[in-house]
Image 1 (cartoon, protein in one colour):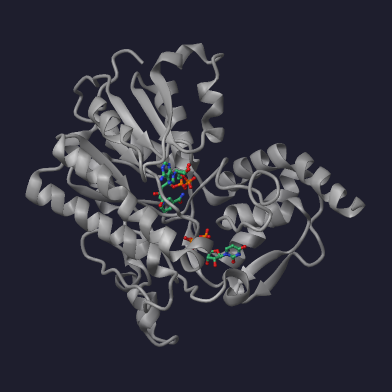
Image 2 (cartoon, protein in one colour):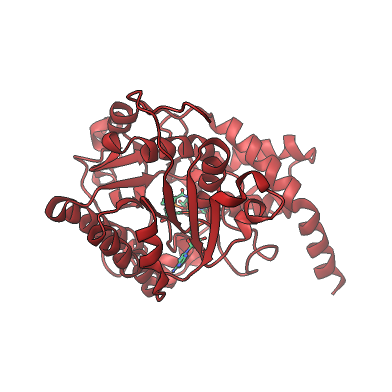
Amino acid sequence: MAGRVDLDSNPIKQITICMIGAGGFIGSHLCEKLLSETPHKVLAVDVYSDKIKHLLEPATVTWADRIQFHRINIKNDSRLEGLIKMADLTINLAAICTPADYNTRPLDTIYSNFIDALPVVKYCSENGKRLIHFSTCEVYGKTIGAFLPKDSPLRQDPAYYVLKEDTSPCIFGPIEKQRWSYACAKQLIERLVYAEGAENGLEFTIVRPFNWIGPRMDFIPGIDGPSEGVPRVLACFSNNLLRREPLKLVDGGESQRTFIYIKDAIEAVLLMIENPARANGHIFNVGNPNNEVTVRQLAEMMTKVYSKVSGESSIEIPTIDVSSKEFYGEGYDDSDKRIPDMTIINRQLGWNPKTSLWDLLESTLTYQHRTYAEAVKQAMSKTTAN
Ligand code: NAD
Ligand code: UDP
């Protein structure tokens, strides 16, 4: 760790980071990275700590004095401002960010992603503290190409689908499609952060993650989350594979996504943390444009990879179609395609993703199998016995 320098060869000083949402999927990987590879200190704020308990146990003496967990709900806790004041940098990851909630719990979604983030922005601005705010690729909504006729050759032209931070519009569906409550709340908080930068000099960076996936993402229903809960696609498909049931393709599985390995994405966040002069005032797409698949292709690939890592043959009918209304309920809508433009992050931070979709699925599904296969088997045999 000694002699670490930033991208401009300046020595990196130790800082204290107030990380809100540190107990979640991204937070847990970011904490691990900061503790194992940097000298920085973390004030970890969350309502849950299960995903970082391995970092908080007394046995991890090497970094025991560099991480402190604060069980705080940022909705209503007066300790938040004090923690932001103690830190050099605040990273806000807290959010409701599972699509199944956007149309079924739109109020919670809007409060969580906009209202609850307001004090964080305010305290950073008033106290002259730097903020890295986590937004989403979903602020782009649908691509311009989605509105062209199906047979239009322009649909193949990247100008109609590649998503650029400084030029692409934000295209959401009508209000009754409540799916867009999340994207809209995230867009508004981005605008507020940006305006605080422009009018009051807030030093900020906005991150737009494009489907980061890996170990510890979400939960397996009935094992470490509610039986009726609907996590994001990686955990939904993992759950189906673990239970040897068909993977459900919503509306034919035609939507396209680019998936990036969490460990590649965390490298980008670390560069932002340690290179403030290059990251401040910027909005960054963080994704892997080389890993694009339709959801159907993702299902097929996950089925093959899971078979390889578990040693189990795949089931006879590996996928079934389900309508979005049946799966998510009224008010669901979808982003058609999400390819991030990488120009800005490449220019500012020299960062590029590395891991192929096959490789990231192999390590992630190995983790899922090791972590959950036995528990799922036991839960299933109990259900059959009853
Ligand atoms: P996550 O749900 O695993 O983590 C969010 C964490 O925030 C959870 O641990 C939760 O307990 C905590 N939290 C929520 N409300 C809180 C509150 N009021 N007080 C304290 N803690 C609270 O989600 P994640 O995948 O780690 O996402 C982190 C951020 O990145 C979110 O803002 C999300 O919108 C954004 N994002 C992630 C992805 C992705 O691919 N994972 C994609 C787009 C955007
Ligand atoms: N999806 C699916 N089956 C599932 C879960 C999700 O077909 O069991 C689809 C979903 O409709 C969307 C894509 O997978 O098109 C990605 O969903 P995710 O929840 O990961 O989040 P999003 O990328 O939409 O934010």
